[in-house]
Image 1: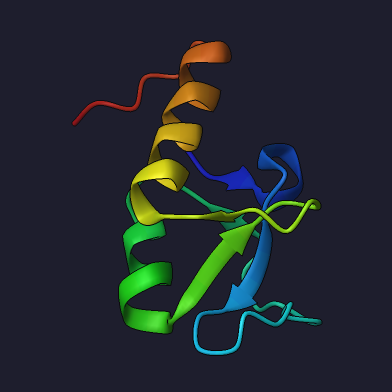
Image 2 (image 1 turned 135 degrees about the vertical axis):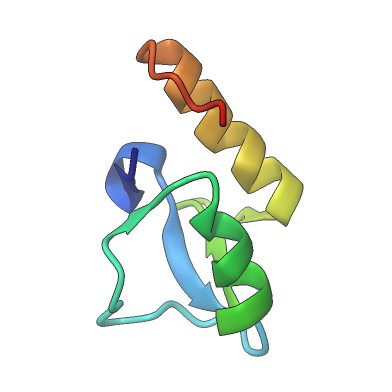
Length: 75
C-alpha cells in the first residue's frame, strides 16, 4: 500500500545538498520503497519544519500510518 508524501508530511530532498526537489518524479512511498529512496536514489525526507528523517525514522512513520489506518503491512 503506497501512501502519498503529503499524507505523511514528507518533502523530498536531495541527500547531498539537502535542497527540496521541486518536481519530484514519485508521488507515493511505501514501507519497502523507502529504502530505495535513501540508498539507491539519494533522496531523503524532511517535514515543513526542516527536520530531516533518517531511514529508520521514515520507516517508523510509515508503519505508524499503516497502524493508524488499519492497513496490513506484513509480508
